[in-house]
Amino acid sequence: MKRIFALLLCVCLVMSGSLALGEGWVCNTCGAKDQAYAFCTSCGEKKPACCPACGWWVEEIETFKHCGNCGARLRAYEVGDIVTFGRYEQDGNFGNGKEPIEWIVMGSSNGEYMLMARYGLEEKDYDTSGNTGVTWKTSTLRAWMNKTFLNVAFTEEEIAKIIPTTLVTEQLNQTVQIGTQDTVFLLNGDEYYELEKQLRLAAPAERFEAEHGRICFWWLRDGVAANMEGSLAGFSSENEVDWYIGYGYGDTLVRPCIWVRLP
Image 1 (cartoon, rainbow, N blue to C red):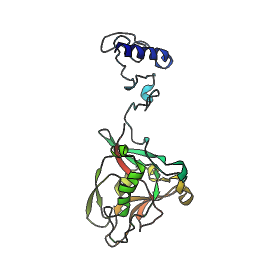
Image 2: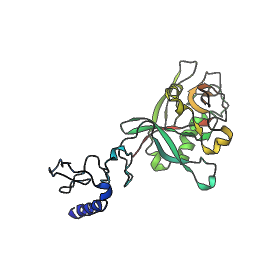
Image 3: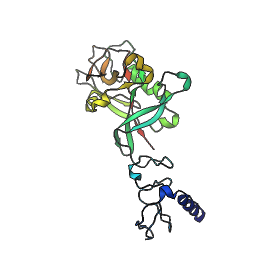
Image 4: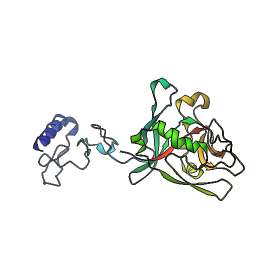
């Protein structure tokens, strides 16, 4: 233990240009005063704002989201943060492999985070079964998202961090509420309207830019009346943000959502 502490002290002294602080901190454990480094040189206690993984600290460390020394997370993710998780083909060059998926943090609860894809990742019909009265529960899009997309975009280790979510989806023009449990899902109309305008205006992944331009249509999960096909779709353009009833349009993109445990 003494050897480990001595080594840590040497490393910190070598890095004193970034670790040294003004004097005045009093160690809560042993009472030693005027500690100029990221830890107490008498007993080893880390200062409160230190990185818990490596002890790194500069005076403005509380402005960092990740440790500048080892990369460890220093504080909880906040709504609006951009994180990467999983990989999916986005640039249209299938020869260079899949690109990291960027997600917007939409909310959190007890260390778990709701994420929405920053870009429209795939172009899909809401349903291709040919049936009428399609709902989110019965749509082929839901099946694709929770099987094909899930297994293409994430490793087994990443899938283990995704939390299945219980959803209640209303049928438009009906009083029917349909419950499902999904690993990957879409927003509904109410959630869509709660978004800031800049989040509703979604850009397509790079491989769809030539067809869709800078702003794209993207699906919501709400179903339509029983005698109609399709679903409520998110409508996003340069000048307008709204929703409308779609009919299985194949040129609508998908912005998946997940609940996940992030490190």
